Amino acid sequence: PYTTLFRSWAATIVDGLDTLYIMGMIDEFEDALKALEKINFSKPNAERVPIFEITIRYLGGLLGAWDISGHRYPILIKKATELGEFLYGAFNTESGIPVPYYWWEREVDGPMKGDNGVLVAQIASLSLELIRLSQVTGNLKYADAVQKITDQLDKMQMKSSLPGMWPSQVDCEGPKLAFSTSSYTLGAFAGEPQIPLYWSYLFANITPRLCL
Image 1 (cartoon, rainbow, N blue to C red):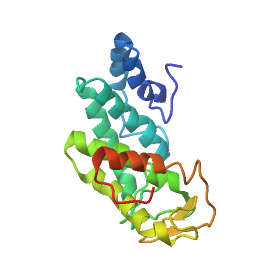
Image 2: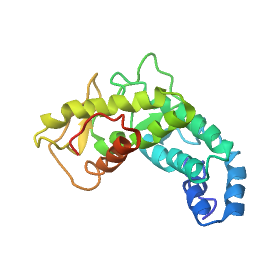
Image 3: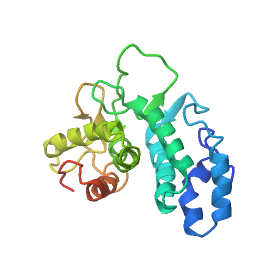
């Protein structure tokens, strides 16, 4: 439905922008952009925000629409930047790996504590959107933030109990990423991030070498 909400940010509208344009529904696309102007991406209507879902659905939707529409609608980059600034706050941890769920209203003295039992997909599937945001804005801090994740995954990839694979969950509580399980999957959780990492490498050529 047109008005479906996700953290009060109208997920259906944002996630469907590129589809509207591809289908030639330009009037509907521009109507959606008018609705987009009213969304405040710096203040969700929720205490806890899932960083993975917000990145792939909203930031991916905005940047995808920006590219597919020929870079003709500045509101898309304005809102992508607004959302990127919000997401950037989740990377304020000792390791630089974002918390999977961001309690954005809580005041902290120094870096936030990372989580244990984090699905690899939650941290390793953010690269494509954040790298693209750096490219279109010229602000490298988004790509630098996600690079800290891929650097640590790169260092740990051959140290798992199944060298060359990451387990489904990782420990992000300390200063460096560690493995918290010996469970592996080939689909969701651990296998899923391979695709965005691969496309990030082809797209930007700045992702570290990973055994994909």
